[in-house]
Image (tube, rainbow, N blue to C red; front, side, top):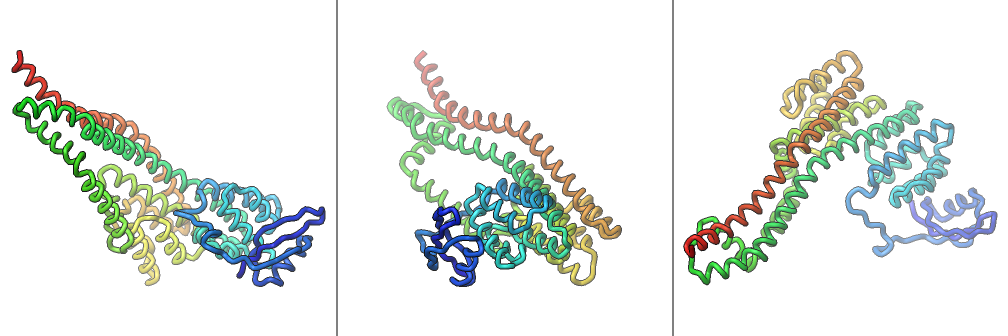
Length: 402
């Protein structure tokens, strides 16, 4: 596949420019002529560093992708062809990355490619779960229903992630405010009193000596603190890139008091919702487990899912290895076992996902009401400690003067 920069004129006389993906120049010219366009110029477009789209993280916002799935399903249900639906959504989407990908998908569809094949050429935009479910939907003839399930899945997944994110954001913000307040007090306020205490040669309490030492460190050895911070961030990133390091970081996340349980519930909700959607779309179970391991976002949970896949290959039930995994409560494994026995695994997984999504929502609401006063007291305590370290010698000096 190559890209070609074209300059064409429409039937109304309007001149258009753009970039087209095609097998070769002749195929690109033929495609433009089929659209009723007069080709004025057509040259191969070579991507340079300056013209390249550079994305950091996920190039498409989840909100835009959800809208795309929902609108695509609506258009297909209304009888619009896949080719026309892709063209309509290319013009409608607000995401630059998604617009570019859909433009290429539309071109592939015009050449006769299947929709699943077209989107599989843009794996950075379309998740592996989306591609697998679309392929299964095409094979079963229920692409509309598959797109509806995908939209519902991504909506629920997004809501759960946002709930967890909102619970974690407040402590981080308050923590940063606390650090900023402490640095300001130690670098600007405390030094003014240090000079006064030194001139009086007064005997200072231990807490005051500690605060003065910290103030001196922040003023004169600030670069050491900066280097320590950089070293910590670099160590985390290096550990995160290694298989073993990433596993232990994710293990620690699950073991953090209060927030670890929230992360665990969120991972269970994501796993069961994903597996339910894939199974309901007739994606083979082993392939589904491979996708779930990839999207669940936790190496510990992913490791248990991998063991379940290995057990399944040997002819054992899916629920057997999960029963031995400390991450999954009995409710989860029992519901999965019942689903396997009754042949309604997707329904059981969906019910488990519903339960844990509600549980995450309720837990976040409770945490917000508890964390806010605790963090405010914590912030006030840190600032109050520094103020007390300054005021105690002052009271002592005033007492001696009296």
